[in-house]
Image 1 (spheres, helix red, strand yellow):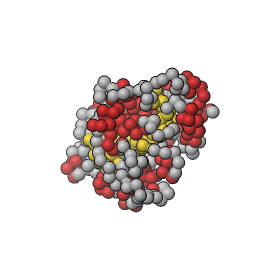
Image 2 (tube, one colour):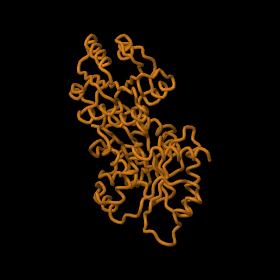
Image 3 (cartoon, helix red, strand yellow):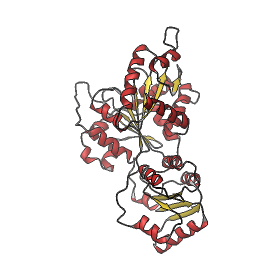
Image 4 (tube, rainbow, N blue to C red):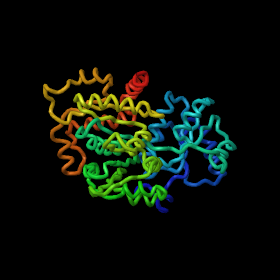
Length: 397
């Protein structure tokens, strides 16, 4: 089952889990849960790291969590780590010592239900946690990662599919859905060991019915929190979804998955436009040809001009052995004035073997090690400062 909880699963959920940094807050919370008759609760002393470690030991995420960001140097980054460790549907509350409107707004944008300034007291917590009139709250939302290429054959599907695997293996309770927008001959599902189907078409043509059961039936379960959504239409068959269909679908998937990985086969058309507009991260895959240099420049310029521009991760992928006739990487970056986040070297064995078997990349695969590094870039675990520096340079152009 993709994301719908059964009655038995709900019985095993903690209703409320809290990790705070001082005994006084812990005592107030325990007293609140006692007088409010809230069952299945857990209160402990600890920070967000302690919360994440606890979540990795339980089978199901709790319904609600309270975490303490007192003394946290980078609270927003800490909350990103927490988001990867618990289900997207979990309501997250935050407490801390800073009475800062800017921090409060930033937390709400992250999907936090509310921020409570210490010291905690029962009346305030009762209104925050149990009041039926709490006003509108921004829902927590998974991150949409779009991968697209400068031309066919640069390895977009291979990178997207194996990135989906890597994102699942990188965190407890992390759920990822791989969406292949090549509706005629996409190979992403095959790379993940699944045949074609019509799931993607069914959802795009029935966006007014996107409840949990309907979406669940359309997804293929690839195991360990990874799901596949694709279609395999006959070549004469035409498909013209209405405007906004993909936007609605991606927003729905974002409510239930930590990462929505979109394999975008082309830069033109309504589906491509909607995918890029919904993206939080866009990975642009290129080879080091003259044609790709031109397309990459235009593509990056377009993505950076969107109303809410995503983070852009340019990747040079060597899909063929390097020869003296190819454009050198240094000349390529100088010509495009685009800094490459990652260069993937030619791997003659790993990707081919994985594709034919529909299995994960071999542990000895150089390509696989590059995909793991890309996954850390996407989650922010690696080179966060470098990524921010690159983005600032991009905006100034």
